[in-house]
Image (cartoon, rainbow, N blue to C red; front, top):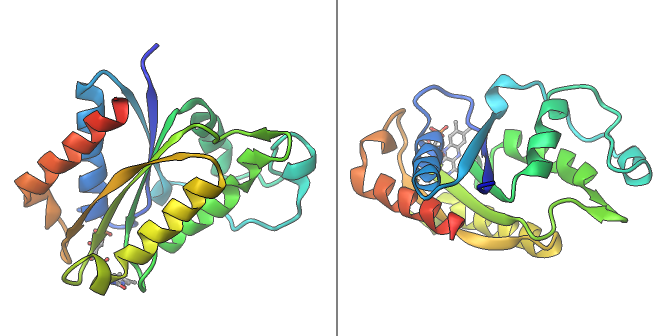
Length: 186
Ligand SMILES: Cc1cc2nc3c(=O)[nH]c(=O)nc-3n(C[C@H](O)[C@H](O)[C@H](O)COP(=O)(O)O)c2cc1C
C-alpha cells in the first residue's frame, strides 16, 4: 500500500494562497506514488481543546463530538502530515492552532500516534519574506512540535502573496512545492 499523506488546509478564504501551495505539494506526492487525504478545516466545526484530560486516560478518545471525529482516523492512518497555513498576526492561523491543540488526543502516554510520521508545512504571507512576515515563527513552532512528538521534519514551502490567487499564478514556486511533495514520498 502506498504512503498516505494527510494535508491539512487552514485558510478560511477562497483563492487561498496556502491552499495553492499545499495542493501543489499534493500533486508532487501523488505523482511520486503517494496517496492524499485533504482535511479542510474551513468546512469543519472544530472546537478548542477543553483540557479535560479524558483523552489521556481513555486511549486517545476525545470527549468532544465535532469535526475532529472525521479527522482523527485520517491522521492516525497517514504517515505524512502537511500543515498549510496563512500567517496571521505573526503566527499560524487560529484554525490550525485549534486543530493542533485537539491533536493532543493522539499523544497518549501509552500510545504516541504521531511518532515516526513525517511533518512538512506550506505557508503563505503578505509581507516581504519569511522573517518580516512572522512565517519564521510558524516554522519554529512546527519544528518544535515535531521534535517534541517524535515526528520527522521534512521541510516547508513558503511564499509571499497577499491577495487571493496570488500564488496560484506563481509557476516556479508551485514547482518547488511539487518537488517537496515528491521528496516526502522519498
Ligand atoms: C487576520 C490576518 C492577519 C494577517 N497577518 C499577517 C502577518 O502577521 N504577516 C504577514 O506577512 N501577513 C499577514 N496577513 C496576510 C496573509 O498572511 C496573506 O494574505 C496570506 O497569503 C493569506 O493566505 P491564504 O490566502 O491561504 O488565506 C494577514 C491576513 C489576515 C487576514
